[in-house]
Image 1 (cartoon, protein in one colour):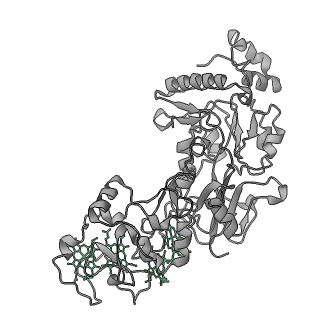
Image 2 (cartoon, helix red, strand yellow; image 1 turned 180 degrees about the vertical axis):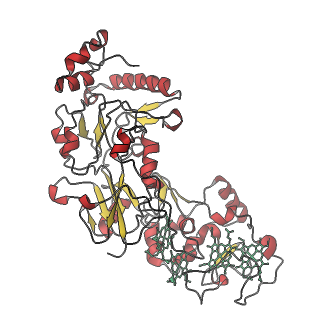
Image 3 (cartoon, rainbow over the protein chains, first blue to last red; image 1 turned 30 degrees about the horizontal axis):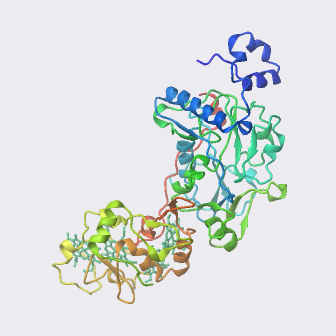
Length: 297
Length: 173
């Protein structure tokens, strides 16, 4: 049991006026190194190395398996984009569960970064969607499906509202969260028009045999209670050149991913050959997540 | 569509074993390494087909079969379609193109491409169907036949994976 109050907890608790009651329960931890840690973005390469090593040890011990925590930076001339073919998606949720397996969200509170929305044909209003559907088979007559996850906005409202700058847009366009800097105020969640951000109300629980030890500092490393998380385009995979887990899991091949700056990429093919649209375009969030219909359009 | 690479059986078998079948002619973009998922039929108990068929006189007659009863052509151009439109009568381990060229099962996309040209082009570009591996490196194509049974090609419905818990259910945890 962790008896230390980190800077994160401290700021969060004092923010809601609970500081005093919790502070009385601890004494020595408060001035531990967590409180005065440097922000990830301002760390020197050596500090990063040190932090990654410490985290690897911590997680390896906790989960009984050798962890790798990387901080592979964005490649130059890469801007990630995603395409989703709604004429193919059958709402089977293979993506939802592949994402859980890859990204280490809490199983107990069941955090999921992808929501598969079921819509009645002819209806466009996302608020009328259902995501608890559970028929014997999909697709179902008269319905279509829209998976929604972080849209990796070029103009992300979540980033703008963060009071401590714990969330930002990386040079390759991925919006990330530094869990060690997040104070859990959830302002970003309220600002996100796509409901893409999830909050850890409780200490996350992941069975040891379900943990994925291949992690990125800004992605799927284990989180803690009181922080916000969301899809990172599988930063731990895509920064190494691999496809995101949801792309590979999709049985109908509806998910396309690649570099928007590379004219030969799949995503550029999608944008140049189909009519694409983005969710809630009128909000000017400029998502880099494009929906399209490869047929029947 | 011409094949441009060595189809020497030993060479191909070796490649099957390591799971890497080169497809020089479906090159989609920049000089990337591309490979194919292996054809399902290669792990069928019936394969190699020649174990039986090599000793059988090919019968070109369209008829009800006493063997392979599970194979029904459905939604694929029946009643005109017949087995030997796709399977090679002389060598049952191969498929047969309209121009009488033969291709092996790992190249079945060349068979499909004859009648589904647009889809084939989209597949090559990684749009129809899918590729796995690296977005900026070697990719592996999933064959048409991994998703479509060539005899009844409509994509089969799936059982969806578990729905998320409703908020009230999560809170009870």
